[in-house]
Image 1 (spheres, rainbow over the protein chains, first blue to last red):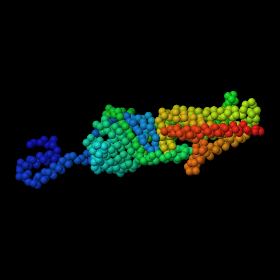
Image 2: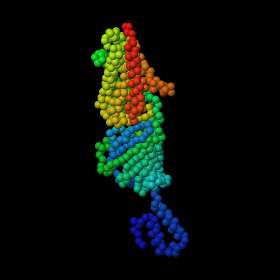
Image 3: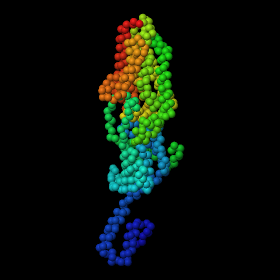
Image 4: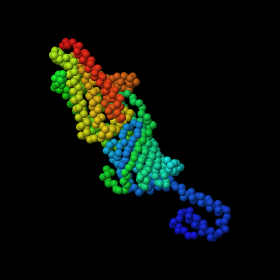
Length: 257
Length: 279
């Protein structure tokens, strides 16, 4: 039996060496010690082959997004924030590698502090953080790997990032960012047409919000009685629905102004 | 009745004092517009910094709609004073100059005199409101452009889309007119009680200031009395910018304001018809 070593895995090479040894000392291979060793060796390498390191899991996402040089998309922004009343609004998202990003709209937009592409900029450089795999969870029906990301520099606003990654497809299904400035932010992604590039169709941001309070004299809210308290769970939700993606067709600097 | 109303209008608009309100409004609006043009970003930043701690707010925040709204808010207290300046001596001014005796001897009913003065006072008030609309909204839109309107209340922020604002400003102006008509009739009523011009003007201004201060104080006692003060309902024009529109509150306040107008006018008619004109 002859293998092309360039095509086989590390475990395969060891098997190859062992079988080559068989021709030299056939008696050794008949001992029970060797048979136990062979079973353990096989179990170990089978597990090793399928288990990925946290960085490998993250790189499945990075590889997918690395295909994107630029994109534009229409976005519908809907806000459900206890102390803010605002109608949904349509806007246009423009991105160009590595970090040029713009949202254009005709009206006032309330957006999360994180840009839509924050995910990829956060996890792109694996040398900037330490990744730890903490388990597996089902997001809907999809099995996801849970990876915690801790920035190496303590100057970063991010304290801890927790990512639920579909390692098979290389997609971040959910992320939870604990930041110094904004507390905890939960982002849930839904994918559709742009699966190939890892671009979501829908992003739901759940953000911790403070109760808005302005003195009556400043808001000129005079002669008004106290209104019934608005149901407030201390969380604001912003939903971005992204449609009509145009990927890698070029984005000019003019568009990003 | 119409010739009498025309005479009353002529009397109002030929007096220099009647134009103080228009000039004052123009100056106030121009000053606010200039200040917002130069330093509007910092001014607005002060109000929205709480929101910016959690969110990223994008878009043209300083625009003609916001400037007009800020001007309307600023003028909540001043406008009644400008109205009272003219309507406060509609009857007492005649008494002070001695022309009321001449007027009362004419073959017209005293009620018609009151109605004519009320009509003329209302036209003056309407002119003032239209003038405010022109200089605050139209000029504001010309200078600052169109845009979404951020409405800041003490506990909530509403952001109204630009295309959703014009009819609200129209409604707000109509309610402002109704509110100021309350001042017109109130000052006219006080004016019927006295024979000097200054008294009703000062008394009207004092009542508006006192009621407004009571309305600003957040004491439980005043929470109970506020619904009975006409100044509480005078600022209901702000509700035109609430989303969803509080129709019930608007209807109640409009009814209360209309009720005040009827009561003040009724008292004026009752008193003036029975008044002994001795001067």
